[in-house]
Length: 195
Image 1: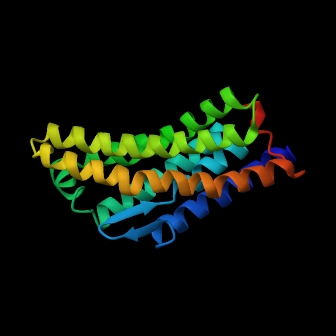
Image 2: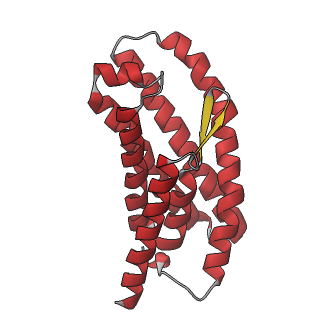
């Protein structure tokens, strides 16, 4: 009972971190015309520490913040999709973010018998790339479905993967690894192994 209450409390703290990062410049780093998002870090760290259920709550929070931002101030790439069909934007914002914890958790479970550092690092990279590729893949799909010029978009998306997606994944791995290792070694256990 106390462990469940502790887990819910820490999940709520991680949700607050996601929301604060998502609604402030802390979660989005402006690198020229591209934004590098760091919101995968609390989602993946929370998933690896608390389990996949908490991770899904965090992924949903990430999606909700992203959807709110898209409605309030859509980027030039998202605006045409928003004008055509708001449901497409909702799918684009929520689906990749809900799959981050599933991919990270599944890969971590598969690799955890070996080196813990390797399992965490690869899980973080996989979770981050899941977000990047699915979000941009959905964007490309919806450009095709609404009849916009997707050939020109391909070059832009390739640049985003190279100049934002790869640095995002590397930063996420560098930041998340010590957090997860430190908390995992502490006596403050959440019972994530049960999920």
